[in-house]
Amino acid sequence: MILYNVTVSVDESIEADWLLWMKTDHIPRVMDTGFFVERKIFKLLSHEQEGAITYAIQYFADSINHINQYQEKHAEALQSEHTEKFKDKFVAFRTMLEHID
Image 1: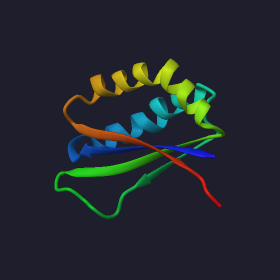
Image 2: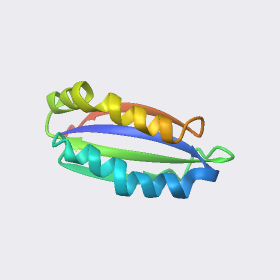
Image 3: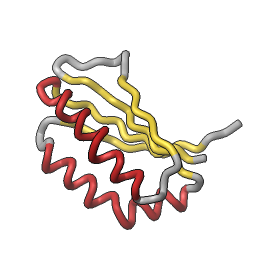
């Protein structure tokens, strides 16, 4: 199992609109690509920055190949839409982690 983690710090002024859009539009569209089997949303409780709220959106894939295909076929368009909609009101970074027992 591979975790594709997107950490996003959003300006407090857009938090409610951003979270609603993520839950009702963006995340469902990411899941509709078929490359992920599960998703979770977490709100960070530590490392808070004044004026910003940080979330971790976690997408789980069966293989690194699925994430690579997602990035090649869908990520740019979905990320561009997010950037356009919330321009200058967020900072995001992405990481991939492999589950180890």
